[in-house]
Image (cartoon, rainbow, N blue to C red; front, side, top):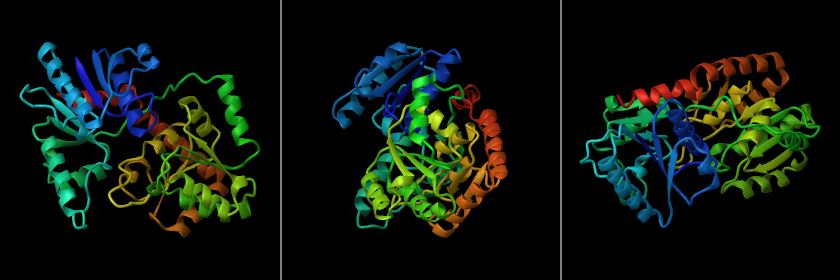
Length: 372
């Protein structure tokens, strides 16, 4: 049996949620017996899975301890091949006496990067918690070269303990109904070209750079439409800025969307743009949304922040701009919107790469091999 212990899992929406859910599905389809220990209350979708799910709710610290004790109990009762955790937080309270193989995923966003602020003592406490959590694990799976390098520099972790495995994607997707298709076409309307950002709406994701670019893009493409899918703490700020810039007619806020809606929105988009920057301790560890866009044949524009360069191949599947460089971001978006042939070629290259390297049926082999 393989145990997957995670705070992030479907039906919640997000990059790590998609990763952990996709991993469980792929491992089960490959013939492994899988038990998922997930946060939250039991959901109706749990009954339709091809693996078992046990949910844990309640106050977070107590929840983590209860889940850790359950892992230890199962390890005594069952033949466990390996334990996969979504982050160090999910293994912090697991006792390592069982000798079971523990593999923990690292995404970059949860790794401390600075220790010279007024919060020095608190950051040191967090750093020690992380280092102690990684002790005696079998393998750390980093989502990008950036994350691996960050762990080595910030936590002084042996490079031989860390393996880089990029997340996988479901290349088949959910069933798309006529209702889904009609809803998305209604959202897009007569807007053209279509620029899309699918991400949690927080400052570091860089929505603000696309909005400022849009002000200039409208001069060349007056009917351009910018779709922002997702929610987050920066949403009201972005909405306010849209109003202040008088571009409300060219921006649509979609909130959280379903997987079929995501697939359709990408299919009907001309360009996917997400230009993140580092904001304090928060940084883009990889950027699975770029791979999703590439799978749908869409050219991408990103920035040289965090692990984005692992997700976008510059001038091959998209364009990487200097993080925070508004002029460059505006220039490159306009350049691709004006050059359909290049856009299409970048999209084709990205689709081929996504199919060859990121399909879960192939990617799961790497995750399973990491436990051997």
